[in-house]
Length: 356
Image (cartoon, helix red, strand yellow):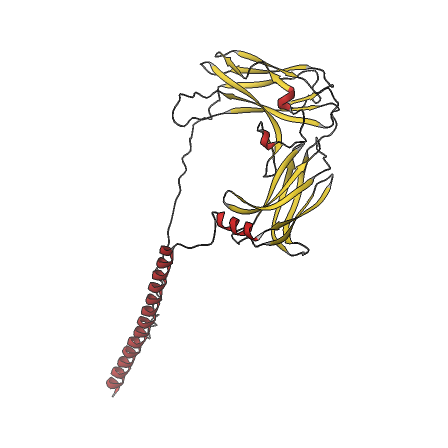
């Protein structure tokens, strides 16, 4: 009986690197409490009592009071900070909050941080006791459309003398004021003010400066944005975003990533097409990248296509070794084939001589 012998197939040289990153996290058998609780005390001017935040109806120039209950569930005194912030638009397309004037648009007048005041910015509560924090709302004397949007934050006051990493918890509670109480999420105006090439966090981007001049939110926008050469329809770069939102009277530095390719001088157009159930926006803005600006921005970016010299050396060495290994395998394979043929030939001659 003949024995079939299969030639061994060598698969060698598996090169790789396994890198495991461990991020330290705190784990608990039970989620710890923050040591205090808050509860809004809803006044009679609340427009919608089913909402868990303040949604207050105002009259021009007429002051009103509203309060917040803070209860200490810890076994030691709690000193808490109370902070007011205005609603703004984030560059990521969400409604955010801040008291930084640089992040607010000039069309935002009489914001929450100006018309709402509190007696003290902090309160100390003894264990097992409740404290009432009072706020005064003084609306503008002139009639206003839409809403004023903001929030209050309650957080434990940090101990400046404490060293090391500390965990910080906070509660946030929305504040909306309105004279009419009608729908406020159907904003119909959006302006693309200007566009330019820029660097953001080390990356090349095209920025489009958008703003919502109305005292209403624009929500659930389906955005399709792109950059073309001026007068051309071919898309050079694009960005698509769903559920984009604008706060009332707010601005956004909308970005389209340019990637690793260099900026080139020329005239371009930024297109911003967006739509929701209430409105469709088709905005565009021409802009120019000058040669000196392109050169400067390309130099400033932290991300560029460049390979360190030692990486090139390693790649050459690895490729050389693989080539040598491949040649050795081929020669060894031919050697094995030759040896097997010779063995078969010798066996055949021996059988023939025995028969004779």
